[in-house]
Amino acid sequence: QVQLVESGGGLVQAGGSLRLSCAASGTIFRINDMGWYRQAPGKQRELVAEIISGGSTNYADSVKGRFTISRGNAKNTVYLQMNSLKPEDTAIYYCRMRSVFVGESWGQGTQVTVSS
Image (cartoon, rainbow, N blue to C red):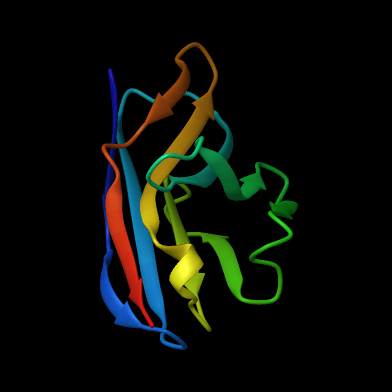
């Protein structure tokens, strides 16, 4: 069984920064990719950023140039550095991991609130 635990959410003023962390634990054979999704009230969950096992990254257009995704040295951790935050970034942020044999795993989510 795999567990993902996110941390780092909170309340910040517009223009501020937050760093989200996600740590995966359990029986993990090979991680194919890790990423961050978010879901705002009344909206569908959307991809924010993802990092593939080879190191390549993808970002939503709305966060390019402001957010940076990275893997930790332990490789079972992923971070999301969020700068120049905007009120429209307010959402619950979820960590997702896809790995061999287990498939897709999700964290419980962490709230990010950006005040104007």
